[in-house]
Image (cartoon, rainbow, N blue to C red):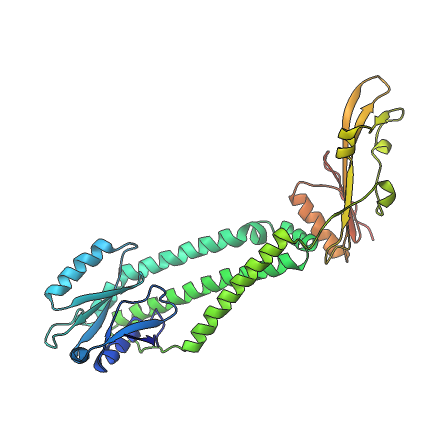
Length: 356
């Protein structure tokens, strides 16, 4: 057994037929078609008696055409054609060793009509691919671009690079499926017009480069995901107290009515009072501040109070607008200044104040 590189793309049915017949004329009989058809390494057996044989490809019309395939194989066997193998979900391969046996398709038009269900299935695959692509990129890039831009500012370049890789992979798959579908449709159209499309040889090295590029992008995307999950670029460091809050802030005690006593002693309140800071690629200052305590009002009533502040200073006012828009989408409202944002939560929505 010896393997040869497939010199025609998978959509070129007539080109693959021509190649199989050329190999048979040289004494090479097709073996079992490889599972990974896109790689294109096809096994052949050296048999001299196949030099007079003919190969034909029959398009598979159904999504899962096992019954249809068995029925066709039995019908073709009566005509002198023997089933050899199947090329993915695309074609069934038949070989005839009798030079006097009739051909599977007597003319090009009949072959074009035989491809009707095959083309319909290919358009269904394209529709599924488009839906999959929309689901893959819709949440962050299409349906909620404000959230995506905000996360890009806060998370650093890793998220942006990961998103570009994902768009590249998803877009490449869509383009490849679309091109495959269009080419098959054009072949059928020419056959129905009585024309025989010429074969289109492909470059093996180009296919290998494409495969290596896809594998490299997948590996890089996985590495970025692992890095972002287990080794995040933005790491918050705990702060001791208000003396370390180097940002515009308000104290919980200042937001309570005059005469209110605020109790923040005890392990429970110490746990609920925390603050931290960090920095990212586009946001040099990130502060998260939470204050909590038991408020005793002048009328004698008591109530647990919480105040959460998130301060973000970005490198430019435009980036601050991205963050503010993303926080709005995330149901976090606050006041924004040029190059930064002061966002309290929870509580009623506060209007934005934009200034230089």
